[in-house]
Length: 120
Image (cartoon, rainbow, N blue to C red; front, side, top):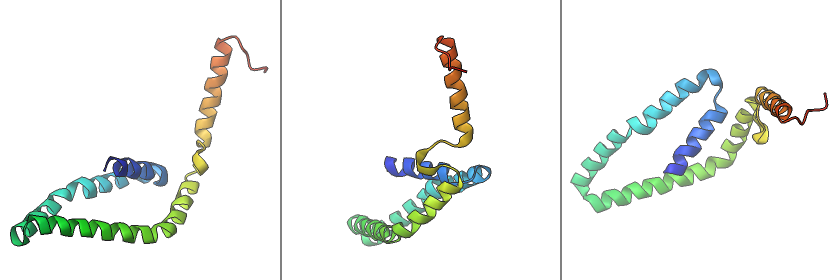
């Protein structure tokens, strides 16, 4: 579950445009945390009707079916995800242009403080 949470957060941070990130994170939070009580209510009602072991077995079956559907659609989603990441300017893990400029300026400043100079 921890891997799923961190992976989802990473994908949201890299694929969603800056101006929409807050809205997308709020919807994600509502769906992820806000729907758990409803799922618990449904599972409790099912356990009362058909018993706990069968309810857990059905929940596991639904999870396995969901993962199989996700896997079947993964290749199509991968191309779309790559397009979104490229559109954000984050190809293959390279930092965005504004970040490289800050890093270059910091490197030059540190080199100058150490007396190494940059040759300019």
